[in-house]
Length: 114
Image (cartoon, rainbow, N blue to C red):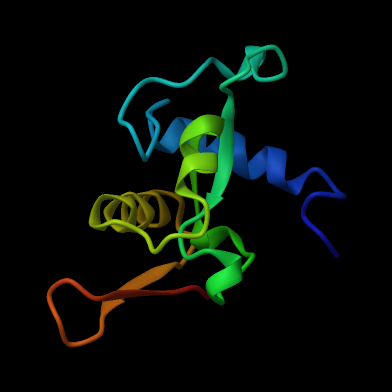
């Protein structure tokens, strides 16, 4: 079942919004209040930290919030270190079980989700 069809994405977005303290994981600026998401052109959107096009999982352990424009600009590029730190932090706060491991090099990361 798709999380977009049953409203699960909205619930995940709201939990991430609180866990991230309304901060975009890409640019570090505040995001619009949840009550205004439908009205704001640059509203918060779910970002798959490891892009689905690159084999990333669809589940909540691979998600953070970004402004829509930041998320669009990110496209399917590999995640930055900051995005990986955000992912680890929100997964720890929310108990979602996403896990980040290094692949032997200090600058190479992979994202594993439960």
